[in-house]
Length: 320
Image 1 (cartoon, rainbow, N blue to C red):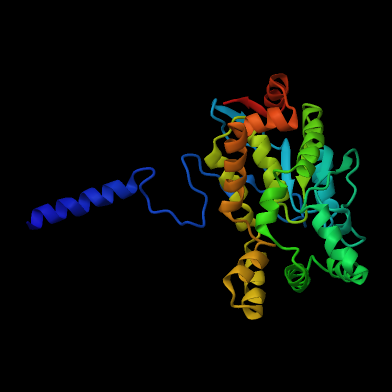
Image 2 (image 1 turned 120 degrees about the vertical axis):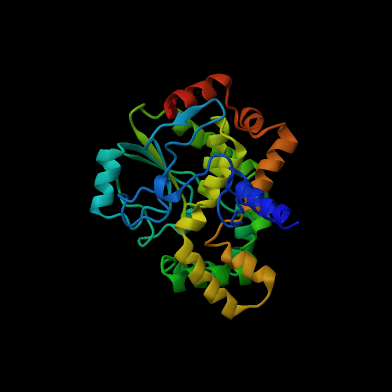
């Protein structure tokens, strides 16, 4: 009996050492190919949050994403001289795709200029109709919101924006999921992929929004889908924003827990700094249910052709 018990313990220990059998932290990316924030992070793009590249990811065909050809990040408002030099000379950035609303951009939040890079503003956020409905009822609210946005880069300012948006029905993860599948978003995806398809081979593209997580995350998920990357890796890359923004998330949690003990309120307000796997999973599920796959969504709704997919792979992938 004792020998059987020892054998069982030894077998259990062996199983725990096998790939895929180790207990997983639910907050960390999982899967056969594990992404690592420290590997992807672009630490030389200084004073920019969540700046990372996709180089090294391996797709289902065994091809590898080229190093330093696609950078995803938060806004470039804080970019300093060293960061500008890295983007210009190391990464050779040719295009910067900004996914923010115009109202998010002010003298405190506008991108720093990177010599040689073309700037594109493709607004990708909650439906304009919802925002216009809120602000048209009380024009003073819009001025108040703009004032809050000017300080949104500080922890207190970020919470103030979250509080305003929650109290005026502007924060909704459900509406965001719906928006990313709607006509307004599809119109932006078409313009974004035009830029991605027309970059010089030796240059890089930057895609960013305010925090580099949701809007940037959905566009990167679509690009990785176009390049035949496994869904698990796509979700992992999306979830790395929680590693990059860990300090901001902790600060927001502290503010929000003092503000309300309601679970729904906390979920939506913390969402301003965090990413949730169910958000990207729902978008990918919806695209698949309606079109057959995410790639078919890109074909049928966004208008990408087989030739476009081949060109994207030539631009962004290399053989292992």
